Image (cartoon, rainbow, N blue to C red; front, side):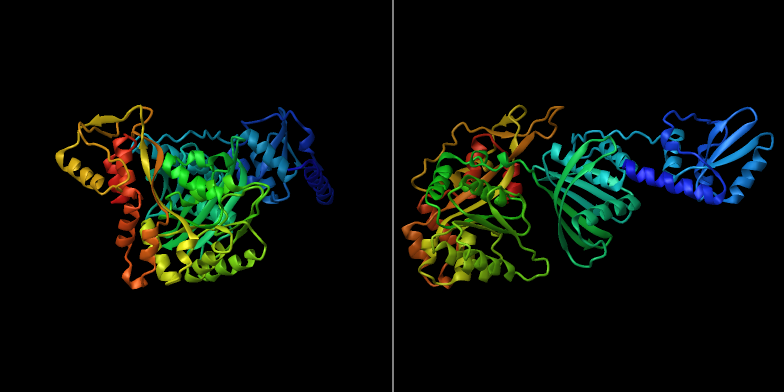
Length: 534
């Protein structure tokens, strides 16, 4: 409360006291307040809306508010018959100030969440207890700050029959951190909905975005930046909040973990920025991070960059970013916006996602007229993405000239070098690996499996899971003469298997090939590869 607001409240209370015929006490000027804890219990002070201001051997002065009833004053007169009781009107803020002294708020200690096992009931109990004590906005801020510290990608709020479960996705794996009572989960859901400008009663899936700074009970400030996705479920609205890191240094090519051949392909595209580049994979596979890193590298004063995104996940200085809202199901927004921004003479365009035929055709046309078009696309692999694009575009001789790169990727957990354990795999595993190696491109050196050692996760008190961060398993499909010849066939005669085999013959390493190289290098485990790639 500002000083001017408090002063006005005291003036209004003073005028009210004059009208009612009461004395008035300005508690805002009384810095040293004497407490008389033996006169009334704090529960009764809350109930009656009175506080003892002064007390002697034979006198008591109670502070009352405008909501204190005459019945209450009669009760106090009868309760203290041996003393002369008087009353003085105080403001509501003055009453609250006194009650904070008589009943100090319990100090909330925000303990850091430590994910130490898959089934840590002590952790869940501790975090749940903290969330039961604090305000709704503080619940959201606490969870967000802890998720950032643990480098989680998402926060999940899932309503069960008798409680709501809170889970963090860390390195691609979900971990339970809290259970909320129905009342507290409703409070948290309302706070999220209010901040994200969505409805708690909607029967449809919704999207929102939260950007705010929350000052918590311990006076710390938390920058909350979340993309919110909701869907109505049988027990309530389930929510997934994707965390955004506002550090621009995260979006650089050097941090993508590209090997030398992968980096050479990307550098060649940046050197001659034109054509169509697509990042392919499921949700959470790092597609947007890959394109943002390319975009950040291309972002100079000599080029104009425009993006179309649903939603805008990260704001870059010097880039015109246009949000598109497609919750209504009208997917034509992307194509309409793309046609509009091409009239603004951009050099580079990023399309958040190619979702329909119209957007695909417009993006292709833009890439053929001197623009570099970056886009994400949902497909299982680079060859599947190309097959789908052929279905969309049809037999277009310019199509193969437009595509510069299709980069498919998945994220797997990286082994912790300090705890990983070497082992000799069994013959069945060696045979599977050898079969994959035998399918390597003819111009790529094939690794030997003689005296092979693989690695599995270890553990330590500091890292009980044995993993540290994530790495991308990638494949990069670029056009070759044989691939162009294949794509000139009728679409019905082209399959993703044919495209993949042709790409391999031209030197493309598939995600499975790339995964084997990471296994042999001791970067991840067979369990992780099977979990992510199948």
